[in-house]
Length: 358
Ligand code: 5AD
Image 1 (tube, rainbow, N blue to C red):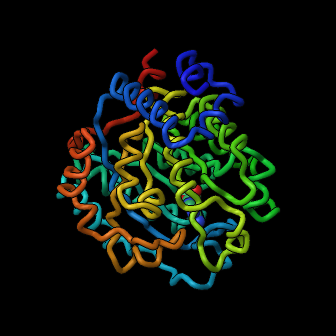
Image 2: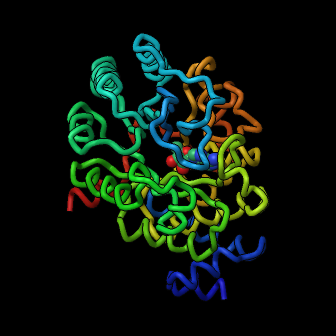
């Protein structure tokens, strides 16, 4: 059955569910196909995005997230301007060709201005060479436009779950957490001209395989350029942690995450897909596995240690040691799985390039 679906490439929701159910032996067939599609369409190359976790202040109260507004555990920080500049300098000096600026959601004018300044600095310091991805939540369209004009060209905004009902069980039911707004914001980002990335959490309480299959079809339908998705990891001191008994085992969440990456590669042959930190957090080497089965982006964390410890979206059991994230360590890991790390190349979504030149 698995073979038949893969041969006919008939990726209906029903068939995607069957592929998600594949056992350890059967899943190898999926992985073989997704790896060869990747090699054929975008080559065995890995692009890096140095991640800067700019601030953990957040106006949102997502029920799963460790930096949600109501959680009093994390020490709140915003990296001072000078420190941000220093981190950008480090990214450039280390040879990263792209950075990701990520933060909790904040719409204060000071925050928006701080991002303006970081964009201006990054572009100036690198002579326009540094690629910039933003991951700063839902903002006014005018803010998205302003950051785009200043040089941000990719934006990550996860839908978290494309099933409205499930979305609503993992967010508070109020105006500040609306499924429709999230969709609207994704549309606005696209209209402005960003390469748009989205993604979901995998293994949420009450999430079904149909939901995950629906997520894959949603991403195809929305015609995304990039994706970052990974396992849900229980974050203590969050409301969703009470449902921890309802989620699949760590092993199953990793299995499902790898299958989701592989299946998305089957559906969208030339987009950028990240092998996420959450994946690595659950199983050592899972990041390499993610690359092997279809992902092509890694986001090494460049946030200074003093701040990194407070940016806990979930319980990082095996917090990445900083040396693991050096370029040479990543190059070594990637060579082990037959991939080459591309330095000095933005590695923009080929899917996006094709769309915009056609
Ligand atoms: N487990 C896994 N991923 C999480 N995120 C937030 N909290 C968790 C968690 N407990 C993810 C969300 C968000 C991204 C920045 O981090 O998908 O969009």
